[in-house]
Length: 228
Image (cartoon, rainbow, N blue to C red; front, side, top):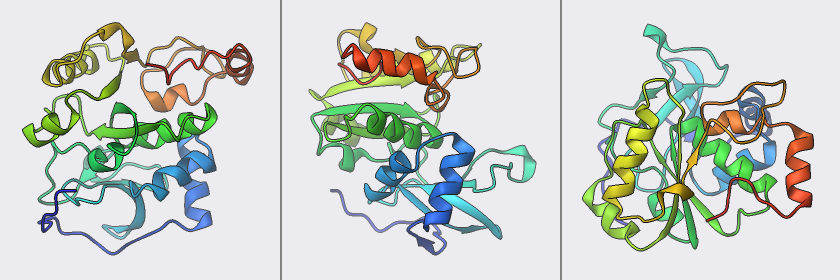
C-alpha cells in the first residue's frame, strides 16, 4: 500500500458498536452482516462530525474520507454527504484493500460501498470480490490507481440517472482502465424488481429486491449481480 501522511483533518473515529452497525444497516436497508464486512475491511468507521453522530467511508491510505449522518438526515445546506477537508475526491476508496481479491467491483458513492458488501454476503461471494468506491460519477481514476488496476477482472456498477451521469462516469472509468466487454457492467436500474415494486437507481436500491425473486435466482445457481 502506498503510505502517505494524510492531510485530511480527521476527527476521532472508532469501530462501530453493535448499536451503530445495526442503526446504519437499518437506515440503509442492509444487513448487519454485510455492514460488518465493510467495517472489517477497513472501509467503514464511526464518529462525530459537526456534533452529529456520523458514519465515514475511508480506506487505509486516508486520502479520501466522506461522512454521512447516522440518523439518515441531511447535513447543512441539504447535502447528503460531506467530504472531509483536504480529501482527494478522485481517490478510489478501498483500492489497495480490493487488490487482495480476484474480482473487483467499482461502485459509485458511500452507500453503494456498504450495499455491495451486503449483496456479496447475500450471494456468498465475499471471499472472491473486493469493492472500490468512486465518490461521484464526475471524478476520474488517478494514474496511480489505473496502473494498479490494469489487467484486473473488474465490473462497474453504475447509477441509473435521468441525465445519464452514472453511465457517463462508467464509460469514462471503463476506458481509463482499458476494459473489454462493457455489457458485463451493471446498470442499477434492474433487473430484479424491488421489494414493494418499482425499480432502483443505485446499488443500495438493489439491496431491496424481492426476497422471493432473489431466492429463486439463488436456487437456480444464478448469482444475478456478482458474476463476471
